[in-house]
Length: 264
Image (cartoon, rainbow, N blue to C red; front, side, top):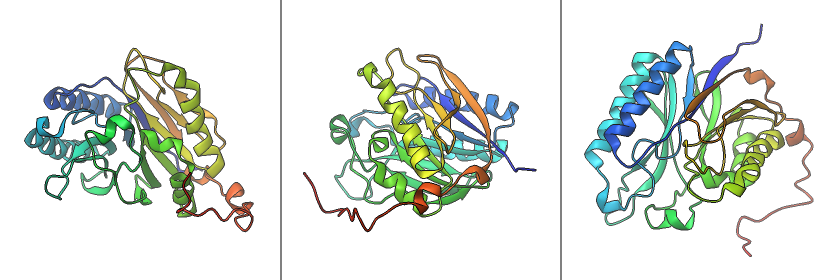
């Protein structure tokens, strides 16, 4: 019998008030626990708020919120990926736009800082300096990315080559650019299909969205998809054995030795 893991993508509204965001996240975790979800993915910066000027960040509330999320993961025996701003250890540097992965014991098992920043991001965040790592979470080999990262195929391919079975994408894609819906959703399906992995995308709920939350299988087909604008949690049971390497095996890198240093 296949060993399946129940995963969820959370499509929820959030603002810039950390206590309100945290309360909403706690409510969602409770609902997912009743649905026996083992692994949940939340949107980008859903704890801290998104484009908040660094001097206005409520760091005590954010860090306390991270600890509360660790408690929730432990209490509910649920692996959780969620987005938040995190301080930059370098003095006078902008914070990072990060995602944290918590295991079922509430331990932080991985962190990723967003590498590809949109123009608005650059006013509030420092860019990450490392590709997402591949790590084990809820019995799955996972790599995390954030929003604009989905536009770039290289990190997903690097993760797949390192053994990833699941790519998570946390989005804060809202407010303008509704025409991007089919494009960004196509990116999610492409990142899954071209690498033979599952993709879990979680966006905020908003009246104008650039991508809806969805869970995609290794063939690029939707296992679950959220409607536009609605706050909802979508759930699917996935079998990591379904992740495949057929396209990776057929690559011809001898014909396209792309240099990471070439820019145009």
